Amino acid sequence: MFITEAEAVHIREGGAAEDLTRHRTLALFTESIVSLLSSTTFPQAMIDLVSLMGQTFPQAAPGIFIATAGSEGQAYSVLDADSGGLAEAKRILGTRHFSYTPVLVGGHPPLVRRRLDMALMNSQETRIVLSINSGIHDGIFREWVKILTPAVVKLINHEILLNLAYRDGLTGLLNYRAFEEMIRAEHDRAKRYGTTFSVMMADIDWFKKINDGFGHQIGDLVLKSLAERLSRGIRKSDRAFRYGGEEFAVLLPHTAIGKAKNLAERIRLMVEKTDFVAGLHITISIGISEYRDGLSHYDLVKQADKGLYLAKKRGRNRVEVLKGVS
Image (tube, rainbow, N blue to C red; front, side, top):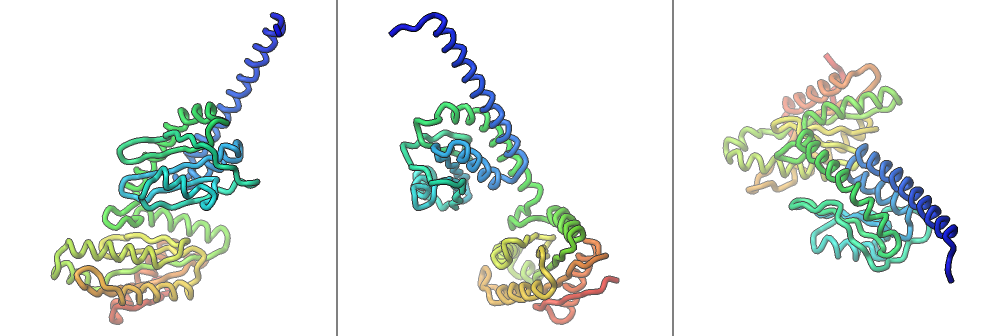
């Protein structure tokens, strides 16, 4: 069967129009993704990216898998862990320990077909792989990868810079600079919405004796070990900081003084019962303050610090609450 020249022109024009529409849609979609990547944290960006791809092309069943030197792997997939997602994460990430985050996009879960892996990043330190069902939207996803790769690299580099600026190099906790910014933000939220929050300041008792008697290397190991236990002892909504030296701070959002004191007591007891490095036993003193209308964030830190001073004065290894500011 032959087609006329007029029909051929019509097909070519129709095809060109279809390609133009496809490329415009692709460009708009990619712009949205790049904007999304640049305006949030790395884990949330990966969740949003997989969600957006999965909702737009559900049959592609996308997943993103991240392997970083010295860290646990990360997997974000529209596939349920028991329906192929976990097996795929093991295939790509290997034997390393990894966290698996299923991304819900609604509808029936897609079938897992032959998979196509595409590298979003492949450096000495970090490998990021996008995996999809092969043979459905391969061309579109390849185009996206070309544009997404620099955006992902930029986001990774931004995360590294943030870690350098806001993380304590020894303990890995958030640092004093991060504390100052976060307590201001928490104070503004509490003031605006009429909520409350508490501040905890903790200090290792007799830490100078540890440094003098066992050396600074052991002292550093104690600080790191305490930071790990402090992070495990608080709730997911709380934030722990190395305030400076052997002093730590914790922000407790939406937490009144009673609950804050209970949490502080649990942490104090946990530390008291822990065997630290070289068989050392240490204790900590804690001061707590609670936001109420009219108090500045400076007042809150001052209150918590005075509570800490009072705990030291009254014998150490205790929790004290100071409500007045003078």
